[in-house]
Image: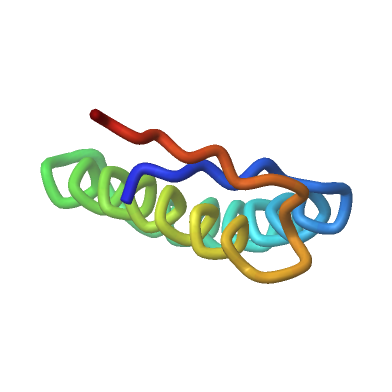
Length: 73
């Protein structure tokens, strides 16, 4: 559950592409919104989505060089 995928070069490029693409869209969306609770929630949810999106890209076969496992005994 808590395994970490160490990105290889291909994975790093994929994550960078994801983040750059999302940054453009989010920047445009934020320009449309007034300051307030809804904008704050939007930013929090986008940050959460990017965490899971990055994790998903990192876990894709071919995007990582190693899996670090955390085992309890």
